[in-house]
Structures are given as structure tokens and as C-alpha cells.
Length: 283
Length: 292
Image 1 (cartoon, each protein chain N blue to C red):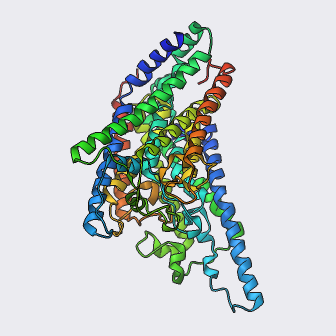
Image 2: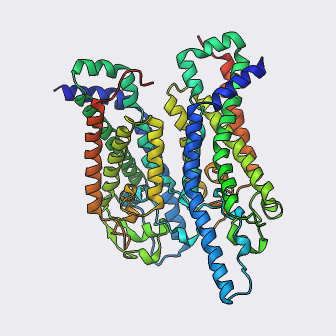
Image 3: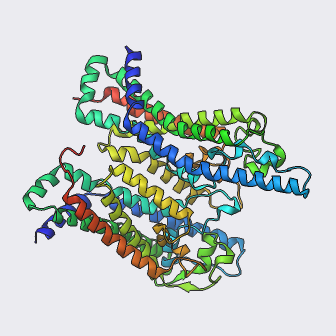
């Protein structure tokens, strides 16, 4: 009961009043949808492909969350970071960065005293963080559906692999298949990874200042785009690098395990370290 | 009096733990580019030496490519260190002093200072101090990388015959200097980086006039640049067959253009826009703002 009350308080203060949680994903997805719509029109008019491409809900999502094709430094081609993927994942990292820290500096101290324990406060922040991340991605999904309705694109459809390969300029040698379709359900893994990374950032903020924890996660995520390896967890948030689209790609099953482990470890480590955390005069 | 205030603010901006931390992080990132670049230099030199010794080749035709000017961090956009540094720099330059106005306003320090020195002096000194701290936070790790690379790799003058190996083409800014006086090219590019990064840091000051949260103020310039890049990618760089001009500071502050070449006009116009915005928001509006 106490937990529900705390979570309700956090959702009221840290989520409902946060308009950025609605406005930012709305803009990000709308820009990406317009971008893909234009690019598909250009590709279709150029006639470089044997067939005409069509846009759909799953294709839009694939374009937003896709990430980038494997980077090969030995080819001596400059690395250009995947700005769409980065801005989507970093925005929610930024939105959820400060609330727990600020809350602890203000009313949080009163709550901690009144609840007579620290675990519930931390678990409530974890719940709030997960809710914010889910809402953020839900707004992206919802605005993409709205865009599909406006442009009369298909909603119940699958990801067009050929279109994704064309958009992300994947290496032909590593493509699993040129043509084919994939269920859009595999696009849910980036959300799970996003939840895990957000929780990890919150846990990290207990040890270092929030801006440094953001800096650390940013470097980690960019390195994930640079190195295609299962050890760089950000790779599991890039559907274009999954084994369904890449010959040596990331296994989705491993991605699910990694995200569950990351979420659990972040919550538990945070829970333990928060017990010994000095909440007074942290400034 | 103005000079004293300026000296005090600059001292606060440079001699603080966040400045040192930012430089340290910057140097750590740039050093991760240093090691592979030096390794690649020695690997190539050894290979050339073996070929020369075996008599397979008469002379090392790739000699001009083994130069300091294409082995330091600014000359490549391939190593992880270079990629990370030129991605994360908007945060690194804001860390040293981007938060100061926010904190001083919050703690009431500003009231005491303004009482003694007056608003124009305080706001002007703060602006200059932020500018200097941001510029230095960007340039010091780059300069250090350049100097350390110079200890291992000779400063062979770039040969225009190997233009594709350097990535500095005729359309690139300062390309004439790169092939005639490469040291001047490096220093001028570092100056461009210093000025632009100084202005980007001043965005923190401008934003702090209406944002109360320090973390948001420090990270906001990074997101503004990221959003600008996102808009450029989505609406301007749409065709893969067209050669565009680089508009994003996240890319054109890199001495070797990772995507497109930029022009002086773009750099100047963007710098003027940022200067006017930051100067107006922080100094002109700041002077008229109520601080009590």
C-alpha cells in the first residue's frame, strides 16, 4: 500500500507534469516519419530498385529504432553516428536523469523519514523510471500510428527487409536476405534495452553526479554503435544488427536475457547502495 | 575594476575541479585515439622497411601518408577515440563552468557580487569566463594529442598527390593551408574550435536565465546540437547522390570532415547567430533582470 502511494506520488510529480515526455517523442517520431516518407518517394521515383516500396507502421518503427549498419573501421570510411537512434534513446535518458536526484534534495528526504525505510523509495523511483520509458516509447508508437492514418499507410504490416537494408545502407555481404518481411514484434527489444539503460543510469547517479552518469552512458551507447559486439549492450537496441537481418548479428534471445539482467541488476545494486547513501548535503 | 572582475571570473572558471575533470576526461578519450594511430604508424613504417630491405620496392611511396597531420585525432574520424571526443565535446565544454550562473543565482552569490561591482561588469565577466573555459576545454585535449603524436610521428608535409589519404579536399576550408603550411592549418582550426566551443558554452549562460536546473543547463547545448543534426539529416541531407554543405557544428568542428565539407559562410553565420542569441539573453537581458 505504501509502495502504491509512493509510486502514485512519483507519477504525479515526475511524469504527469512532464510535458517533455509527450512533446519530445511526438516531434521525434513525426520528423522520422516525414523523413522516411520523403526518402521512399525519392527512391520510388528514381527507380533504382526493381519494385516500388511502400511505407507502413512497422517500417516507420524500424526506421526510428533501426540504429546503424555495422561499422568497419578497416574500410577507412569516417564514422557518422546514427543521430536518429541516438536522439530517441538519449532523450528519455535526459528526461529521466534528474527527477530522483532533485526529489532526494527536496521532499524526498521527508518521505524517506516518514516511510521509515529506503527500499520503498528506491523501488518507487524504479517504477517511475520504467513507466516514463514505456510512456515515451508508447507516444512514439502512437504518433507513428497517427502518421500512418494521415498518410494512409498500412498499420497491420511487417518490416520490409529490403527497404531497411536500403535505408541503413547495410553491407550486402552480411545481409541475411535481400527480400522478405519480419514481424514488428522484434522492435520491442530496443524498448526493453532502453528501460535497462535508464535504470542503470539512475543507479549510476548514486555513485557519480547525474551529468557524469549521463556522459558515461552516452559514451557507452556511442561505443555500442561503433563496435558491433554482444558486450556493448547498445547493439541489442539496434534491430538492423539483429541476426534476422545480419549474418553475424545479435541474437534476440540474448538481448531479452541481457535486458532482464540489466534491469534486475540495476534495481538490486541501487537498492543495496541506496541503503548506505548519504542523502544529506549531497549538493 | 572590470579587469579585476574578469580576472576573478576567469580564475574561478579555470581553477576548479570540474575544469580539471573535463580536461582529464577529454585527454583520456583523445588518448584512446593516440595509441591506435601511433601503432598504425609503426606498423606501416615497419612494413615499408621490410619491403625496402627485401628489395621488393625501391622507395617508400606512401611516405607522405605517414605524417603527423594525418595521425593526430583531428585528422581522422575513424578511431573510437576521435569519434567519441567529437561526439561528446558539447558536454565536456559545458562541464567546467556552464553551471556557474545557475548555481550563483540559486545560492544568492550573484546579489553580493552585483552589489559590489554592478551588473554589466558581472555579466560581461561571466560571459567571457564561460567562453574561455569552454574554448580551453575543447582545445587543450586536442592540442595535447597533437603534441604527443608529434613525439612519435614526424611532421612530414602533406603531398597533394595523396589527397584521398588525407581527406582534406579542395572544397574543404583552409585546404590551401593544409598543403602549404599544415601547422598553420592545425592552429587555425583549433582557433575555430576554440571560438565556436566558447560560444556553445555561452549557450549555458543564456539558457540559465530561464532554466533553474544545473544539469539541464549543462546538457542542453548537447541536445540542441543533436537536434540540429537530426533536423539536418531528416530534411536537408535527403539524397545520397548530392554533395551537401555541412551545417552541423558536431561535424564541422572536426578538422577532417566526416560527412560533408563546410564553408566559412556557414561557420560565420552560425557563430554570429549563437553570439547574438547568447549575448542578448545573458548580458542585455541579464542586466535588466531582477536578481533580488
